[in-house]
Amino acid sequence: MSARDTEARSSSGDLRSRSDIVRFAKRLFAEFQKDKVTTLAAAVAYHTVFALPAVIILVVMAAAVVNQVTDIAVIDNLQRLINDHAPASTRQLLTEQVNSAIANVDRGGLSIGILVTAIIALWSGSNAVSSLLEAFNLTYGVAETRSFVRRKLTTLGLTLLLAVSINLAFALLVFGERIGSWLADKIGAGHVFDLVWNLGRWPVAVIAVAVFLALLYYLGPNVEQSFRWVSAGSLLATILWLIATAGFGLYLRFSNPGSAYGVVGSVLVLLFFLYLTAIIFILGAELNALLGKSFDDETIEDLDRKPAKDVVHA
Image 1 (spheres, rainbow, N blue to C red):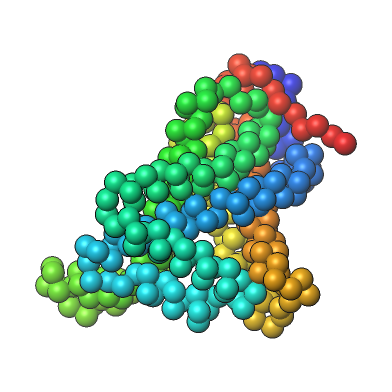
Image 2 (image 1 turned 90 degrees about the vertical axis):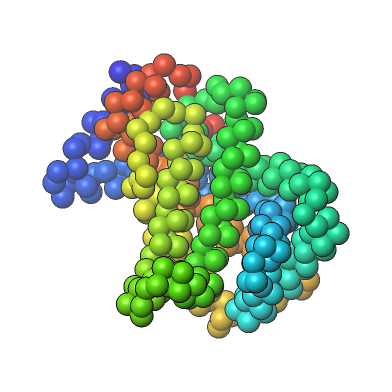
């Protein structure tokens, strides 16, 4: 066992007592500082801003497919949601991006052109995921040893999974009631099913986010680890992200921090939210890494075989 794994195990204890939990929390905070998570999050947010148009294109293209094969006006509802609920400082930016994506879809239809657009958008959007995976490797203190092809396939797959997860959560939260009524009619269920469905679709949407994060934490870092559908880090990140999203929306309802920056204000507000999101996602990876290096024999053995990569301190 290497020194880095021994240190993690000895500092974490076995989490059976309150003092062990407090010691573990202090260790997590120390790792958060040592790995310069806020600096890593700034880089992730920067790359995400440039990848955001590509991700929006993927989401809108998926919505356009739904529009053409069903009678559910997904895009119209998406535009209405932006106009009605998006913060004023980001509404124009989001509207322009969605309208641009819709124009690309309308020109291509369900053809080879739209497939090429999807591939280009997927490739561009994967840059943000790639920067996030680099941050995950730092949380484990491991260097990247995967081949370019394997790493790129991983980032492309996770980017596509992100687009699918966004559409799934959006469909459940916005069209869940209509979908539930359709299912009830198809299977001949009554009002009880409709009630249970409408109550259950909210936690299902949240679980979808948690499962996506669990897959991101499992497939992203260059580390062998035991698979869990929902890890401690994904639960922590999901809860913190939901709280941060609600709090950020409430703050923007009473304040317009981007107004002082003129036309670039919406970009800066969005950048700050992405920065906050990146901090939360990397914190979840820090928790998984610390638990893995302390209790997961598969992770410990794999880290002992791979070259370490430490944060360069200024």
